[in-house]
Amino acid sequence: MSYTHTITVPMSYAQAVEATRDALAEQGFGILTEIDVKATFTKKLGAESGEAVGDYIILGACNPTLASKALAAEPELGALLPCNVVVRRGATEDHATIDAIDPQTMVQLSDAPAVREVAEDAEKRLRAALSALRAAGQN
Image (cartoon, rainbow, N blue to C red; front, top):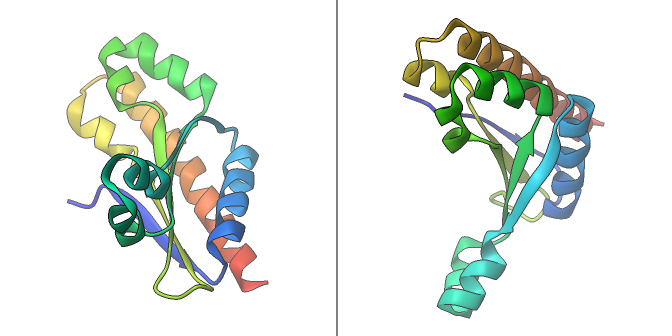
């Protein structure tokens, strides 16, 4: 089972991070959390560990309207929020990979119709953000 939607874009890591923030904002997502994995690994495990993972950031994206609907339907779903979106350096300096959680994962854990509706809406928005990123990379 695939649990992410993944694209690779012809952008530097820094450009991809900013473009991802913008694309998520266009779809109504704010960034609640941000984890610089390279910096964290370097601090906690040493420089070699940080360099091994490379440029890698986890953005905790949240659409408040969708999150409130999901939590109203099933409070335990908070354990799956926010929707994580990863931006990582690609195989070369001028490429980056973006991984977004597949919200359909929630549907596999819940039978609530409201959760299905939220997952479908979130997936549509995340896919639209990824499509915008792909288009931005082609310009």
